Length: 399
Image (tube, rainbow, N blue to C red; front, side):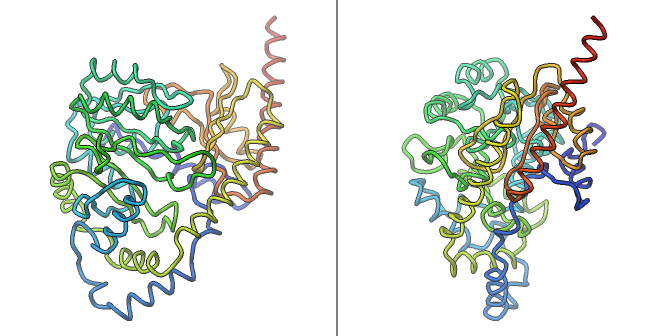
């Protein structure tokens, strides 16, 4: 614990509790899309139909009908998953913790994308691994970089987010998924594939999981798939899942029992009643339309108001944009100045395990309406212009 760090994002969110601040910092879904009346009806039904059972201790693996529902949604994507290969977790975040407990020893190598999800660094970091960061290109990690890392480091895990990655918004191409799978198939490395945003695609064509078995029968023997209802229903329910083959699942279940016995049984039943009684696909389609409009507006505002030397990703789904400032410009300095102008984001260095990313930053577009996006990006552009002109004056003074 002496080497563990607080989550930089969670600390920033304390600052953004000020209602006058326009926040692009948190990875928050838009509360306008939370199905409050439908969840309330579901809770009432659960209590009236299974009141005592819903309030009792439950199985570690999770509420079986909910696991069956998850398996059925995988099947719709052509992925055959057994109910016994699914464990309900407290958000997909707990899945990261359980996998680390079950598989990591101090000093083990863990491959991650560069940049990668901050909370994964935090979850794995408690078990004192050696992080090996692989540069994330516009369509995923280079197969040659994966091959070299597998040979040189013999990593225990490879953590990846192939769909609309947090923080970059980048998605892996079909070609790189296929190449990476072939390499992992021949190694002893376990892929941990996190997919919290996969159903939030508003452009392009859906692609199969990276960790799919060669015959498409389900998760590969070398893969663990993580999912969550936090982005499609509500994060406050804290219901996610972990999908893995029996040999990995057995160890994870033991870790789960030691951690909390089981996830919230009442919440699982309420969630299952909600997805059973409502048009979930229609609800997700509504979220996609909203986030797609907000993404398009933010991308266009950045393109219009910032100079060409500021680059920005153009994600096909998810919740984030990734900006890269000119070399030598500090996103922490940019953040400090922006907070004074009542707008927040996450400086990018927090998403790197090797100290890189000093000139990068993450913007969240899902939890801001169009007026907030327009005004917030205008403020950021003014701050950037002030920093650039100040740097130019300093350079002239030196000369």
